[in-house]
Length: 291
Ligand SMILES: C[S@@+](CC[C@H](N)C(=O)[O-])C[C@H]1O[C@@H](n2cnc3c(N)ncnc32)[C@H](O)[C@@H]1O
Image 1 (cartoon, rainbow, N blue to C red):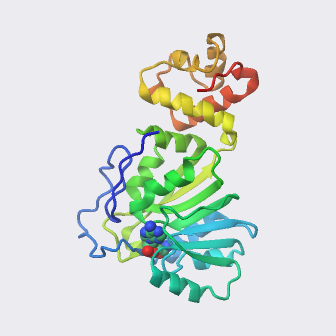
Image 2 (cartoon, rainbow, N blue to C red; image 1 turned 90 degrees about the vertical axis):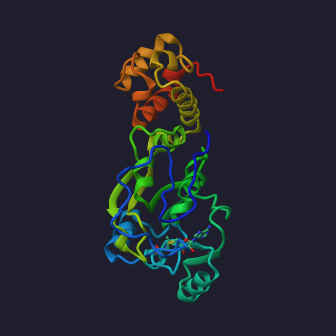
Image 3 (cartoon, rainbow, N blue to C red; image 1 turned 90 degrees about the horizontal axis):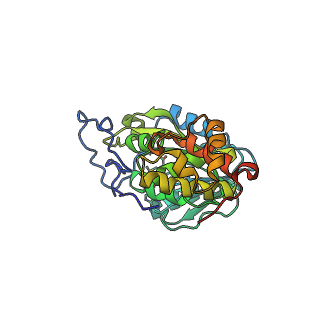
């Protein structure tokens, strides 16, 4: 999938696809904070994000861009194993002091763009730098066999809108949204941070779609998305014959609640997921031709 364009500044949206006209708050002057560090200060937002993550005692949780430990602290209290990753040496020193007595917290000084993520299943609970949103979602959601199973992220509002859209403009976002349920839990106002950024944020909830765990379903999905996004006017009758014989097209489309004449461009991420799942089931998908 081609990489979407990125912006490199917190307070300036990280765009995928169409800009969200509602994301700006022109009445508030731009934040004087040029370091991109906006620390969550709203206890209710912090509590809601951590509660939503439902961290179990055997969980491995990554706090990406841990800052002073705003989320790390409540995460540590869940009993899960917490890895707090931070680039700023002053924050790293502070985190190490703050969590010195917590055996379940590991502080890693590293750059989120390149630091290796664990190979075993993990979840992410983090208020991430806005400028790294696309890059981090790509690192977490692109790989077919990603160990990520859930994420609760605080991200820029417009970005959250674009990645949770039912019909994303960009095929890469559809690749994420068809394999993971991505939804906005709540709007997080700019004044929930100190200093306040120039735009609101959102609590974004990401959960794996159970039917899309198999590499086979994902290979079918990738093939469908590439073709469907290349020609959004293409009908399902033509698209699906890439992976099933023409005689099976009606069975598959009606099982998905669609018709052979449905244009690819009208499909939601949930439709793509269901089609790929159905096509990957051997009884329906034989013979499947993978590219
Ligand atoms: C938005 S602040 C969030 C701080 C804290 N998690 C909170 O919830 O209040 C983002 C944090 O990411 C850190 N950061 C920015 N770019 C980074 C990078 N490339 N690698 C690691 N940390 C980074 C910043 O130093 C900052 O502490």
